[in-house]
Image (cartoon, rainbow, N blue to C red; front, side, top):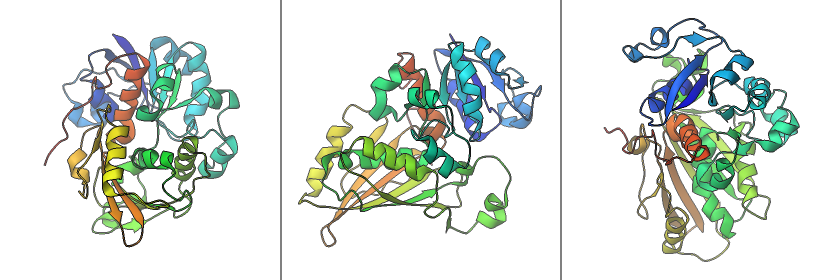
Amino acid sequence: MIRVGIVGATGYGGVELIRLLAAHPHVQVTNMYSSSAEGEWLASVFPHLNGHTLPALEAIDAKKISEANDIVFLATPAGVSAGLSPQLLEHGTKIVDLSGDFRLQSAEAYRQWYKHEPAPEALLSQAVYGLTEWRREQVAGARLVANPGCYPTATLLALLPLVKTGWVNPRSWIVDAKSGVSGAGRGVSLGVHYSEVNESIGAYKVALHQHTPEIEQELRSQSETNVLVQFTPHLVPMTRGILITAYGQLETDVTLDDLQELYLSAYAEETFVRIRKPGSHPRTKEVYGSNYCDIALHLDQRTGRVILLSVIDNMVKGAAGQAVQNMNVMFGWAETAGLPILPLYP
């Protein structure tokens, strides 16, 4: 059994990791770490874990963490992972980082969009961006995996096959994104207060969201053109789920059948990406609690635009589930290990 540590176990990402790893055949959650609840039992923070045997929460000490674990999940706020990772890697511990500290290859871009000092260049250069379906070979040999953000996961899985073709004007992409409140984390703030969010929907960080450069970076890595994305996130009054509606201006004559064939071919061997029937309308409820991304294609002949719909559970495929999927690849296990095969419904 592989020894697994979770840093930031009292957050939503950390507790979702515990749920998934509890059913994993090859790992044991050996240690859990928290900067705010040292010495406590996690069941005192999350009563739904009562009766499930887990170690007490420990203080975050890089040396002790590296000695006690074969792999560590860092479910921490921006800026924390960059400080912890060097010592963990020095002792041979593998890392899957759920924060944004290693997602951007450019230190200056990280400084601009995240408002934190970036990780050392040496670490940025060895970090592998863990969009599993598109980076599988690199993830397999990685010691440090940057788990993608939730919005980029849903967006990139939808856009990448089409961006590679050159069929769409690379500067025409508009991405309208909607997320449940759990994406904001467990911290208390006015923006996620029940009476502020309930029966309301609103955009935020318009033209300023830190996932924008991450999306563009990965699209450009698969294209020979300078792809630009107008990305606008919205908060909706539900707990889990992301819906992406993406619009691109076609530059060549293609049919809906052409698009469908392209996507079915691109994801033919992928367990967790499901291409829906042409013209269908996937809903977040249909991937709830699962590691699936459901994608549907639409073609508007009147405007010459392709319209992509993509849904994920932001806590699973958008965070903990994709992190487990990446761990499975890193250790050569089946990618489905520890991951639920069926969504929760209703």
